[in-house]
Image (cartoon, rainbow, N blue to C red; front, side, top):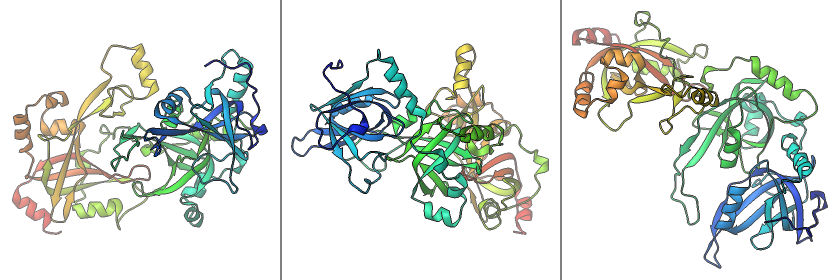
Length: 487
């Protein structure tokens, strides 16, 4: 649609609740996912999408766009964070006082906008109007709240009494991105009701830090629009001003985490007075980050301890106790052990995946549903060097080791250790017939072994216990009895 010459464009500050044909030129700084429902009167499917917009350093409000699915889908595909748009023929609505529940970002004005299909519309602003477009686009990096009003991460992740009060609360933070994990897809738990999205949920997890908390906190993004924008963020180089980000306790990670909620606003690389951002970037450039930040990094199989170094005998119960129970030691993040046990799971001829992929450039794990590493640096190198493989495969088998005290269910036989013990390379292993896999399985399954292990404890950002096989040898029954008699 072309811009009407008769349209009178006003500033957001000029909104009045009585206006029914209000128009403005604004910048989109946030966008919700569409929400669908069944119209009881017409029986058709309708939807709504919320845009958070601004036209000055001080004034922010929300604009709800209602319409049939085709109309809302068109808005959702056309409009993105950072776009300058014309809102034409909107209705001005007065906001209730006190502020509305946290279903959308909090406005700085007392009015909001509503667009109904057939009674107003939104279009991209005229690209020829460069001065207006450039001036508004500058606002994408200029927070409407002072950076000095933010909390330190240590207050929300390490504080005792304060932490309890802040759980399930909304806070403002100034942080830097330390790591970006691979995009995950999750199945929905419940069957969708009429009009609801039936596709998988996507989640992007980031680790963010500040000078008060170099161990970091996890930030989860669920909205496709913010996931799309986060693809341009860079570890150690992107500062985020988080406004009304939600703090909750994660049963999975067993610690407080941050979640982007419907009301959350994010300013990336904020431009504001003072040296807060520069100081944060200087800190991020020099701080030593924990190894567990990036879950896509393959467990280091090249620097395993030698088998002769591993002498401490333990039972499976003792291993669990030292890793995460009453014998836990916070000083060390890993230890070694010898266990005398039976292999009770060695599933290489079933439906389980027994090989994994790693990037040939950065050695990170490549998710099963992807063919290439998601790192932009690796993608650039691959584009410049078209020859050669982009990933390599390695054996990665989950086995279970049982003794008289229980079963280690997390044990993994991986990499060069697996190739040596099984006598086969990863590429040849993938080509084995089902019969050959079954024969190979029974060389290990229900046999007694002396197994030497490297155990890596669960950590804040990595919940799972990692148990790596360093070496294993069959053990005769008389030696097994001798070794377990003292336990």
